[in-house]
Image 1 (tube, helix red, strand yellow):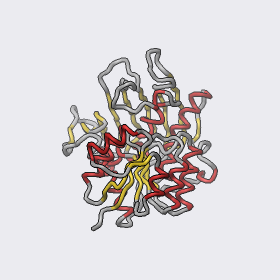
Image 2 (image 1 turned 90 degrees about the vertical axis):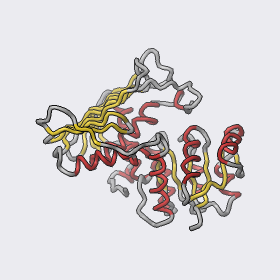
Image 3 (image 1 turned 60 degrees about the horizontal axis):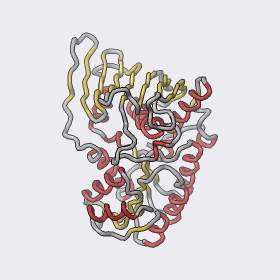
Image 4 (image 1 turned 120 degrees about the vertical axis):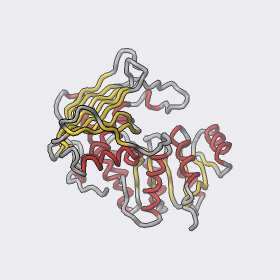
Length: 350
């Protein structure tokens, strides 16, 4: 089988992980790099081999008639011209989350791709963790009964000045929500198999925060089949040691994920201790991103249904935007009021 010819655009932190994952896959090959930073192109060439380099995605796609796919790993700003360049050539896209920084803009980008019948997949790599699959199995096989309510706690001191982290979140609006909580909200929808209907939230910035906008969020999220989740996330914890727990209480027990990449436990209601679920070895940022890439290739090469579609992503983005509105206006916000009218009746593709 001839490998799929991929243009890798955006060579920052996520771009470097993508280069590693793409290079390891026998089903695709990188044929060009695109990034406005010459130093980033030089680093990539030194580590992963010389390839044609371009200052923009648009230039790369215009110069490469043999390009068959685009991985867009750049910041979620000004992507319309890049997505138009790909759709005009019929080139499938795998785009890092969030797709855009407003639901309205993201819906516009989704409409562009759908009108051209070009697959647009969003990089929601946490769906492809082994622990995610095991949580879904536990909730589906009846061991702990039916999920009823949950508590999701994510605590991190994210030093945005570190050399190995993207810098744009330092100045963006609501960085915790748009860059981190988007993953958590997407996982809630995916694992529980329910869609959000109502959110009440508050966001704020602690006095020591290095971020210009709010790095903390607390929210109560109500889903359409009765699930209620109490969510708290921070990028500016008062303690550098990270903490994570996603607990789901069910009719006959509890499921507890105690690390975002693993450490999964369950207990039935009368059991005095938690039972640990064994998980396979995991290479951080590589294993789950490889799963994401494989799903993309299965769609593009084998014709399987598109996962993590742009349209599906809009519902998770609506949760983010609803949190921001709720905090700003001190009220509960319905998800239906956030989605553009043409997407008001949500029919998920994946």
